[in-house]
Amino acid sequence: MLRPRIGRLVKAPGRQDRHAADRTLHTQAGIPYNRSVPMNPQRFQLLISVVAAVLIVAASFGGGVYIGYEHRPAVERVQGVLGQEAGKPDEVDFSQFWEVWAEVERRYVDREHIDRQKMVQGAIAGLVRSLGDPYTVYFPPTQAKQFQEDVRGSFGGIGAEIGMRKDILTVITPLKGSPAERAGLLAGDRIYRINATSTDGLTLDEAVGYIRGEIGTTVKLTVAREESVREIDIIRDQIVIPILTTERKGDGIFYIHLLNFNEGAPGEFRNAIREFQASGDQKLLLDLRGNPGGFLDAAVDIASWFLPRQSTVAIERSGDGGEYHYRSSGRDAELDGVEIVVLINQGSASAAEILAGALRDVRGVTLVGEKTFGKGSVQAVENLDGGASLKITIAKWLTPNGHSINDRGIEPDVVVELTPDDFENGRDPQLDKALEVLRSR
Image (cartoon, rainbow, N blue to C red; front, side):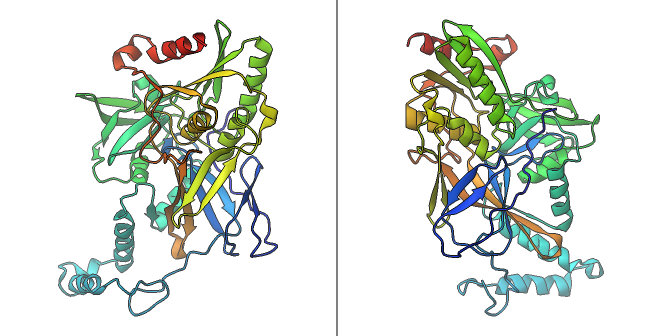
């Protein structure tokens, strides 16, 4: 059975020399990457968000790829907010915070019911929310425990990827054959209500908490599509995520629809390439539409079939301006000279955007379809005292030419829209155009 995309934590190699320039980081598939980062022995979990957002499926937190760092710069813990404690910026005035705190303690009508720990947690949550980043989230202990349960997998889902677009909860893509697709949910649908709960003001993770639930139960989503509003009932189920499909399209064109970048994707893609090579076809159509992303190492591995050895696949840029280049392993340029066209749409996110951007920047591959979702960032998960945790964006992805994916997406070379009417009537003008482009070469 195919497994949903779950990031298992693995350890990086032990520290040899704190000041060594090159380090090796092992990702889920055991593929090593060299990194130049300052080392610190504090354990720090890194969540690389190469998916667009949170995948609402059984046994999946979604939202990214987990990599365990044994050595990562320590996050300095602030012991308090008064005086000159470690990490407190001198220019920040906390007097109003304590003034409000004192007023609550002195005048609130139900003072006997005050939970001071919840007040602190609420203040921290507000601090984090003020950043305006839906992927940076503070989890109080109860939610942090729920977060870990999601990672291990305890709930049913609807089989759809969601994200935030202009502060509106938006469907990135329903998975093929999922309850969401069967119920009629479409990429681009804007979710305004989950059962009786408005999504206005909800974080992405809070929305996920409302959507998920026991297998066999129903969740009602109120969505806006173009100018209409509709209610869609979806029965939660265990989700099995397919990886890819292949098909010979005639005229020497071989078609691969890559649906995600989970742990099995590199092996499945290798089999698809072997099938392509054995078919005698000379041209390749790679369909990344509706692909919400997955593991970073899977994206780099697949890109390596197309790109020369040591060419950049993606650039990770941190908040201090530092950059790290993820590079192709080359695979002896097995697909060198093969004509390739790539299909993208608004459901193509993160790892799919990384691959599409790399193929165009490095190899000049033509992209056909619609602008991609625009999600490429790196989140770290720091476990805090008392069982709380903080998920914080620490870096963003760029294509090899330096184009920022996050919030911007990738524009196709040939724009072709797929309307709801096309979808409902089984038409695919994007696929037709991509085939036309390949046949002309």
